[in-house]
Length: 178
Image 1: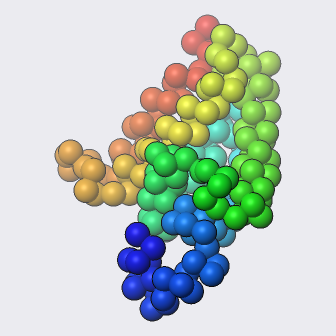
Image 2: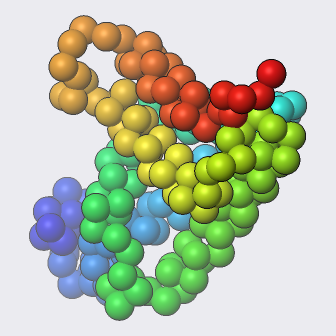
Image 3: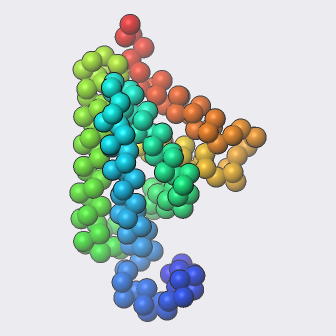
């Protein structure tokens, strides 16, 4: 709650509300501050050669960031379930989020399309639906990998991440490509 945030930060609720409209606004501001993560992912991805390598690199870089900043994965999971409502956050934050989000969706979309064109990604997949599910699933895998509370076995987080990343990558691969 905003009260919990105020108490933890040693500010009054009034001070928190002076700068933020809601919990979602605070979360979104944090996400925007962590936009550097996607910049790092994009830079690392550009160094990879094939589209599948680029997507795998994007995922691994995101996982490394999540391990260093576990609260980021929690915030993203919260926003995934709650959504971002433009009436509950500042218009500037919403617009900035939208621009940043669109930039990286366009980048990933171009990788998916290139993969379909070169035959490495299944050409029967709908790019936008696959991109949406790739992004969402990746966030969930990162969240589950770095939280021991979700562990149902003694599998090391890195092994857990690799296993599920391999699964989603195999779903994208064009099994008919030679």
